[in-house]
Amino acid sequence: MDKILISLIDDQQLFRSGLAALIRSVEGFTLMSEAENGKVFIEQLEAGDTLPHIALIDMEMPEMNGVELNTVLQKKYPSIKVLVLSTYNQERFIGKMIEAGACGYLTKNCEIEELVTAINATYKNGFYFNQSMLEAMRKTSQYKAAGIKNLNNISIEITGREAEILALLCQELSNIEIGERLFLSPRTVEGHRNNLLQKTGCRNTAGLVIFAIKNGFFQIGL
Image 1 (cartoon, rainbow, N blue to C red):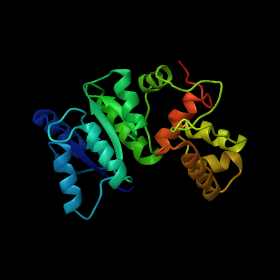
Image 2 (image 1 turned 180 degrees about the horizontal axis):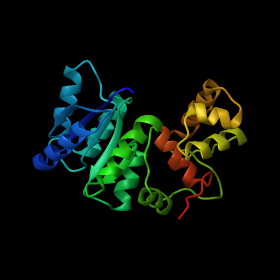
Image 3 (image 1 turned 30 degrees about the vertical axis):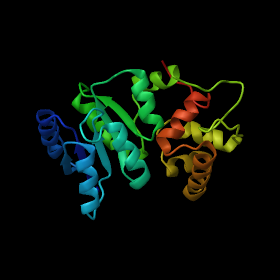
Image 4 (image 1 turned 180 degrees about the vertical axis):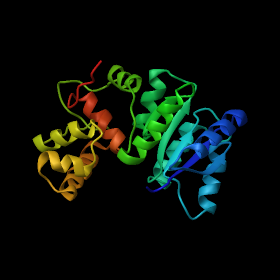
């Protein structure tokens, strides 16, 4: 099994030290770096030659906060998957970060088991959404049943095959697993996924899941 390379960005020294120790103790995880704010983390990335798979970032930090850091990562280092760890649990914060490209959002008082699950799921599938996140997305939906629009508010058409793939992405299936369900090659599934990203304006698989939920392609089980 490949090691999951993780970077931890948080200005709270005690919390960061405890979480760093936890990450080091989990088989399959490697703590690649720590930083006290986004500015320091970007400097580390620019100076290094290996990128982490996952960045665990806090929302509120000096110099460069989590919102600003996520914006820079999406533009300059889109391969890094962002998981937010925050004290804020308001739906508007969750929605803002996910729509800006974050792959998941957890509160700092989450269970250790959930954090480990979230890291593994994000590495494998590109996102991790728990029930509270899905409910936040449903409540903050800006889309209406009258028509499907992308992030730029432009009307688009989603084909039947694309709708099937959207629904299966929401079930955390990989390209290979989706292909097996639909009798398609993984390359064909990836092609449909890329078309969906282009049509919708979403940044990643997490964004596609939110798009699917908001537009009724996937129903949240409450």
